[in-house]
Length: 336
Image (tube, rainbow, N blue to C red; front, side, top):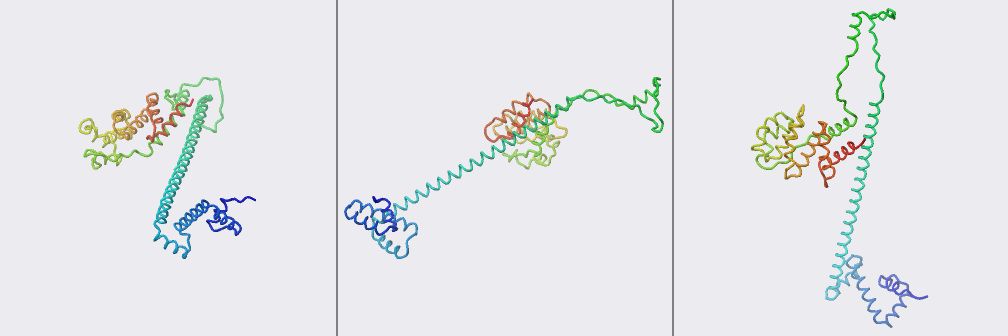
C-alpha cells in the first residue's frame, strides 16, 4: 500500500507516529535532502507554536529557551510567529464581532416583524370593530310605542272609543319623551381615532433641555408648564412670544402645548404656535409641532388637512416622533 507522506510527516512532527512509519520517513529523508529540510522546518514551526502556547514540559522549555538566548535566527522566527498569531487573533475577534453584529441585526429584524404583526393585528381588530359598529348603527330599530300612564295599578284598564279629554292628553304629552333636535353622532371610526390620540397624549410631552438665558429652566413659564398650570403659561408667554421670545423654540412649544392641553383646549391658538415651529432648524421641534398640529386637526374633525401631516410623519426615514401612531391612524382612515 502506498504511504501517505503528508500524514506521516504530520505525525512525525507531532510525535505520534508508528515505528514503521518513522523508519520509512527517516530513510526517505536520508535519500531526499529537500524532504529532510522541509521536515526540519515543520518541526521547528511546531516547536515554536508549542512554546508560545505554553504546551512545553519544563525540561524541554528550558532547553528551548537556552537555544533561543543565543540563536538570532530562532529569535526572529519566534517573533514572526508571535506577529502571525496576533494577526490571527485579530481576525478571529473581527469575525466574532461581525457574527455578533449579524446576530443583533437578525434579532432587531425579528423584533421589527413582531411589532409589524402586532400593528397589523391591531388594525384588523379596529377594522372589525368599525365594521361591527357600523352594522349595529344601520340595523333598523322598532319605534317605541308610548303607553298611557296608569294612575292606579289596582284599577282595571277599560278601553273605550271615547277620545281622551284635554286633561288626559296633557298628561300623556307630559309623560312622553320630547323629540330631540338632530345632533352630530360620532361614528365608530371617529371614536377609535380619538382613542388613539388620547393614548398618544397619555404621557404629556416634557419640555426639552434648553439653550440660552431666555431658555433657562428657572423661567416662570417653564416652571408653570412643568406644574401643569397651563393658564399661567398662556398668561406669561402670550404677550411676549412674538417679541422678546420670538426665536425661543422651547417657549413657543410650551405655549402651543398649553393651548392644546388646557381644558377646554383652544386648538386654533395651538396650531398658530405649531405652524411657527414647522420652520425650526431643530428636528426635535419640527417633529413635535407636526404631530400635535395633526392631532389638533383630527380632534376638530379636519381629516383632510391632517392627512398630509400624518403621511409625512409615517413615511419619514429614521426614528420620528409618533411615527407608529401616525401609521395606525392612516390605516384606520383608509379602512372602509
